[in-house]
Structure formats: structure tokens, C-alpha cells
Length: 295
Image (tube, rainbow, N blue to C red; front, top):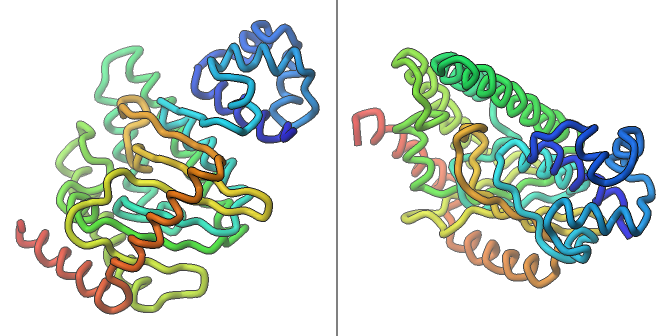
């Protein structure tokens, strides 16, 4: 029984629900101190596991790692993704415009500015809630990037040409209500990331391989994360620059063997069809030229 995994799900639920630790502890019939111990992976009694499954609205089997975890809030999903990445030695990514873990500090700076400005434009209580969500999101993203720099898992990323084109046209944090000055900064940051991606495609540094899936986007972005003892599949509708308070979608995480196997096969097919090396880099730079001229 993986108590550490249960503890991670419990922490993710606390972030997802917005409830205080005292409220969750009361619903479980335990103390707040016990709740924090459970989150750290200490042994949980079976009757508490049953109550926790009821609280999370999942079956006890799902709680024990046999089912699927679902996340409707980007912040709770980012925390769960960080937990999975903590044990991953290989990260295989299909879809999206970039690989967040290897983005630059300029990406984080532009995103933080956009989220803060969008929050400040909201009225009253909405402003405080959005600002808190933005700060929480940036903290979670920073934790993921720091973890990657410490562990250096192998990354294989199959980026989507359509998603990359949209990022170059709209910039980082698309859809947020921000000033034209900040939008320009977000577009500039997106272009800098695209050029960095092209360089990585050409140079293929140790531990990072990037390809470009041409044409239409893959239907549904996902990741396969493999650790020493376990593999996970992550279905992810939330881009790292999505609004933490307004994004709508449902992410999922599962370690079911059949799910891992199917997604692995699809990823291998996508990698075979993807542009790689100089060909991929040239296509990225062609997109940079096309979007610079309004293409």
C-alpha cells in the first residue's frame, strides 16, 4: 500500500478544494497534525482511508492507485504533476508548444507579469482571489522547474506545430485581459522560447530530445512519466501559462498499466512521424518568420 501516494492525493485535494486543513481534518475525524502526517506519507488506518475516499468522491481502489485521479483546477493539477515528476527518470511529452521544465526565466517573468496585471484589473474581492491564485501558480511552477534542475530526468518532447504557431501569434498567457505593452512582452517572450527550442533541436543536448509534429495538433496532449518503480500517464488540458482561476478543463493522472501501454505506443508513433534535428529547427524558424510578418 503506497501511503506516500495517498498523502500526495490528499495534499492535492486540499489545494483543489480550497478548504482549510482544519475543515478537512474534521471531515476525516482526525487532528490537523494527523492530516499533515498523512500528507507526508505516514501510515493511514483503513477506516480513515474509507472516509478519505468518500471525501474525494472516488472509490477506495482509486485512492490506492488502481484508478484515475481527476483535477479541475490548474493549481491542484500542477501540485500533483510536481509530485509525479519527483519520482520520474524519464518524461515523454506529446503535444503543446513547449516543455515547461526547460523554459527560460524570461518565460516565467512574462507569465508572472501577465497574471498579476490581469488580476489587478479585476474588481474588489475578485482581484484578491485572482492574485492569490496567480502567486500560488507561480510558486508551483517554480517548484517544478527547481525539481527538474536538481534531478535532470531525460526529456523527450514532441511539440505540436499548430500550438507553437498559436503561441507565436498570441504570446504567452493567451486570452488574459492585459495591456498591449504586456501583450507585446508576452509575444517577445514566446518568440525567444521558440528560438531556444530551435537551438535545442539542432544541438540535441544530453537528456533533451525535441521533435515537431507537423500539421494538425495531436488530439489531446499527454505525458508518460517513468520512474524506477512506476509509470504514470498524465492527460493535460492545462498549459503552464493557462489562467489559474479561469481555465476550464479536466486533467487526469493514472498509473494503470493498460493506460501507460497505450499512451506509450501512441507516443512512439508520433515520434517516428515528427520532424527532428535540423529539419525541425528550420520549421520552427519558418514559423517565426511567418508570424513576424503576420502569417
